[in-house]
Amino acid sequence: MGRIAVIGAGMGAMAAAARLAVAGHQVAVYERTETYGGALRRFERDGFAFDTGPGLLPLPAVWRDLFVKTGKEPLEACVELVQVDPAARHVFADGTEAVLPNASRAGAVSALDDALGAGAGERWGDFLVRAREAWDRTRRPLLEEPLWADWRVLAEREPYPSVPHKRLLRTRRAATLAEVGAWELRDPRLAALLESHALAYGLDPRTAPAAAAVLPYLDHAFGTWYVRGGMRELARAVHERCVARRVAFHFGAEVSGVLEKDGRAAGVELADGTVVEADTVVGVAPWRSGGASEVYGADAVAPAGEAGVPGRVVVCLALRGGRPAGTAHRTVVHAQDRDAELALFGPGLPPERPTVHVNRPDDPALRPDDGHESVVLTATVPSQAHHDWSAPGAADAFADRMVAAAERAVPGLHERVLWREVRTPLHTRQETGAEFGGVPAPALAAAEGRLLRPANSTAVPGLFGVGGWSHPGGGLPHAGMSGALVAGLIVEGPEFRGSQ
Image 1 (cartoon, rainbow, N blue to C red):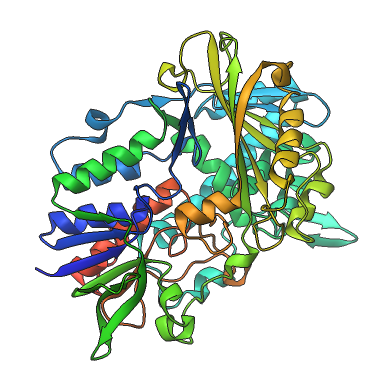
Image 2 (cartoon, rainbow, N blue to C red):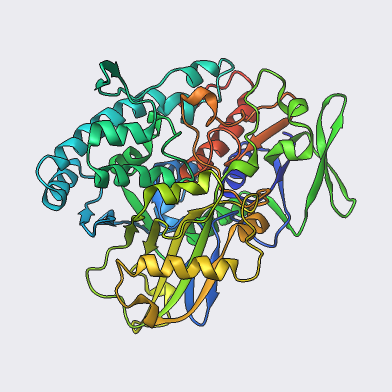
């Protein structure tokens, strides 16, 4: 079988590497940093530990499939998966709170009726039924198959079955997620609940297509999961599976270019001048090693400009005092001024009072003892392309605003802080190589193809793209799917059409 060079040790790249090694290929991974996992990192200090990337795992079946296909030990034998219940507590702008159960439509309907008033739950439940239809229409072409050559079909068709809305003597259907919230949910708190799923992925609900309804549906239908010991444990398990399948890892090995011979990929060149020959190259964002048109061709989905992709600020809080019994694992504190917050997508201004996700896992592995608590705050922000996160005081000033927002859900939070660590898009850039520290969103249909990602195959024979900047986009489940698609294309060839 062939020699395969994989650029980067992110989750999608490792998923591809493990599958390719099992297929009999000789696989070597070249990672410019000193560890694996891409954005799935951990910060540790004084007995505290924090997930600085994704804090929860949607759609764990993707990673279960990887472990089934690459060895005898299932995922649950390598990590402990815990279903998070409740799925989330929401604190809305007016102070109203709703606690939503995990993966229960009836439970969500009841909880929203109790919290927001009769009828609110029914409207959300009806929305979830329509979101399921959008999911059924797009799941296979967007997640389980290589990107269609006729990708414009996906770009032009809106899969979400919007409810007809009469406006100014005209009947219209929602084209954006914001219109779904305003016209179908008809409650600013339900609209905030809907939009928070898009915002968490760096999507502007005013321009995100109605097809983004699949994002809340994903959590609802498949549940929200946590990996005991921290999400970094998933990266550890995948890395160990790769090593067990004799994938070779080279850390501190930055790839400076892809070699070509006779019109096809022939290996990689490292920053220190070392040349590594290979029959196939798998790269994260392969256009970074050459012009996009040369990599993909004129009729392909072009790489989205990374400068326009928002990033995240993560605040790790070491707290004195134990975690109160009954505390929700995840709380979403919604912004009190929606329009001001969405300015992050225009002028690129960090919000004064952002929507903040508060993760408070009940996990002894993340704290020194039961008299302390490890908490992570996350907010979507402009990337380094639009806001200078290296400016003196910029990171701490925004972290102060995040803590102030989180205090609406955690009274007295500021007084409990022993110390904190603030991480900005600059850290994301260092850890993942993203040009401005942006975090890619999942691929979505409609919107004229703006939210599709370049195909895993390229115009250069033997060169493939994997990970969040390639099909099917960002997110932990999507990374695993990306790895499966790349492996299928290499092992079975261009005729590969996805798992059945």
